[in-house]
Length: 232
Image 1 (tube, rainbow, N blue to C red):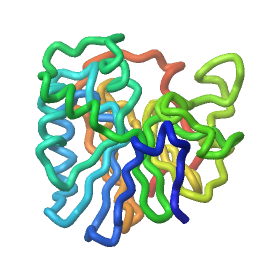
Image 2 (cartoon, one colour; image 1 turned 90 degrees about the vertical axis):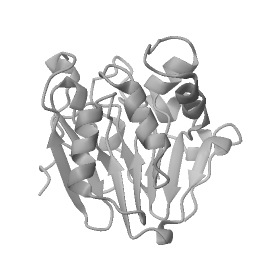
Image 3 (cartoon, rainbow, N blue to C red; image 1 turned 60 degrees about the vertical axis):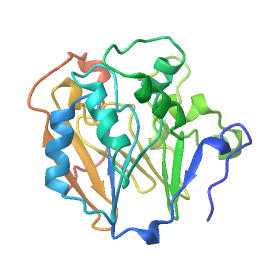
């Protein structure tokens, strides 16, 4: 089934021919943690014929935002969606001093959705109460809770979403990956002293590395413990 959005989002949607790639990895929020990203890539050891897709928030909060942007930008087998933190930079709401003009121009060119047969990569998520054609860029970057009274009140969108595509997302920091039949959350808090996590699409397994240090503190109330079994 081909994923389709409305005319506002569709120009920012990248469709991938997954058959071109020997393997496909989807990586959680990096947040400028270049050392952790290099460590994860060393574990994955992707070749030129393997695709590495990121769920966004490559930048902000971490120590080497330029290094992360440059690494992904200059790698022909790496793609990323634009997360809410990238959007904040583009809108002038946040500044990241170590980003270059070239970094910012590249960030502006990033899609907000990447898809291939059976899969959709976005930063925040999708709202199961409405069709994809009704989603805005803001929806795809920021969706988290379906409750009206707070962004960390249950139910979360991924607890109610029933497909058909399996959505890979970040944005919501997890104590471990959130694993649902049709949704998989990969932000395991790298910049907060957690892990940087990747999912092997063909191998159906996770690869994670420890961040090694805490760059920023985060309240326990803003780290979600999924109501699903831990990964194998």
